[in-house]
Length: 129
Image (tube, rainbow, N blue to C red; front, side, top):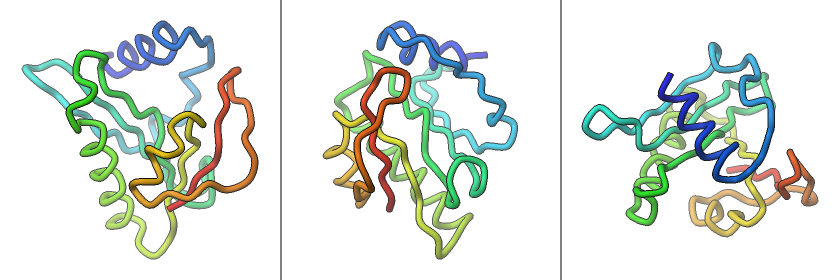
C-alpha cells in the first residue's frame, strides 16, 4: 500500500500528471524499497527483460521530497544497476527517463538513445547502460 501511496504522491500529485500507474507489471517486477523508521522514503521498480524493453528496465524511481538531495536516489539507482547486472548478466539496462533528468542518469553510465518523446505530457528519452 505504501508503494502505491508514494507513487501517487510524487507522480500524480507533485508532478500533476494523471496516468495509469497500475499497469499490471508490478507482480512480475522486482521492487527496491528504502525504509526509514517504518516509513517508505525511496522506491525503484525493476521490470524484467521482455516486459517493457528487451533488457531489464529501471523505473518508478522515487525519493520523498524531504529526503531528496542527500544521495538516497543515487544509492537506490546504483543498487538497482547492481541487482540487474547480477540477476541479468551480460545484457544492458534500460530506463525511460524524464528528459530533464538526462544528465543525472548519464553520471551512472546511461546513454541517450533516439529522440525526445512525450509520455503523459512529460518529455522523456530512452537511455541504456
